[in-house]
Image 1 (cartoon, rainbow over the protein chains, first blue to last red):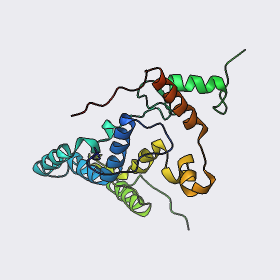
Image 2: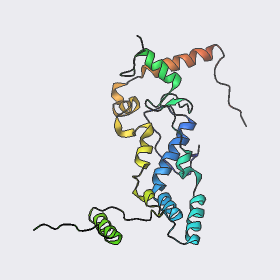
Image 3: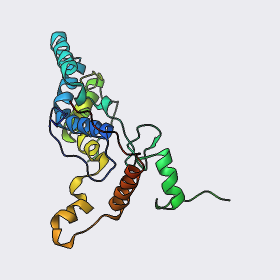
Length: 115
Length: 103
C-alpha cells in the first residue's frame, strides 16, 4: 500500500494510533518544518513600514502554502483513544479515557473529591 | 561636585536618552509604536513543542522493540495474546471480519 501522505514521517509509538492521529501528527511535523518560512512571510505581510505590493505578495504566498503547514489545522487529540473532542489538556486525555484512568487510580495526584 | 537640575530636559533630549538606553540594553526602539511585525519574529518557535505532543519515539523502547532485539527469548505480549484469542473465538462463531472482495 502506498504511503498516503505527501512526505514520509515516523509513526508515533507511544500513543494510540489511528488514521486521524496520523493525520494530525503529519500536520504537526509539517508545521514545525515550515514555521520559519511562515513566520517570515507573516512578518513581511504585517510590517506596515514596507510597501503595500510587497506585503500583498507575502500574504498571497502565505495563503498559497499547503494547508497542512498551518497551525490552525492542528488539533490536540486524546493520547489514549485518539478522540478529538472533550480532550482535557493537562492530561492529554479524552473525558472517558480520563475518567476510566482516574477511577482506576492510574493518574498520579488525581483522586475522587470527597468532603 | 554635584549637578543640580535647574529645569527638566527638553523632550528631544529625553527621547535621545531613551533611545540610547534601548540600544544599550538591546531593546527595540519604536517610539511611535509602528506595527512592524517585530513581535512575530521575537516570539519563540512553537514547532518543537508541537511535534512532541504524541511523545517522542526514542524516549523509551516498546514491547515490539524488545521482541526484535531478543528474538531468542520468544517474548509474547500478554495483551496481544488475549486479543488474538478473542479474534479466533469470534471467527469460530462466524463473527469475524467480512471477507475481502475478490476482483
